[in-house]
Image (cartoon, rainbow, N blue to C red; front, side, top):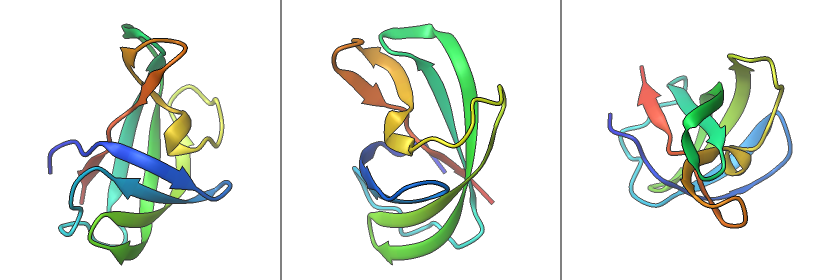
Length: 101
């Protein structure tokens, strides 16, 4: 379904608990999440595309996810360290998550 904003994260790689800005009740364990990592404040500069997998459902807006891979081989990173390209380098916004099954 549509891209969902990431509010906050906790945990250390490869597993993270992610709190979303809206409901993720349609998510199922095993779903794939993609998030595009941009240079902070520059939506045209893509650093890598990250793939996570849903491994647990905490409540209607919180999931446990596991880092799987990223397109440019940057390595495991928290979903809250991935920039959407909006905001600025001093105050970047998190890259939204797109869910696929």
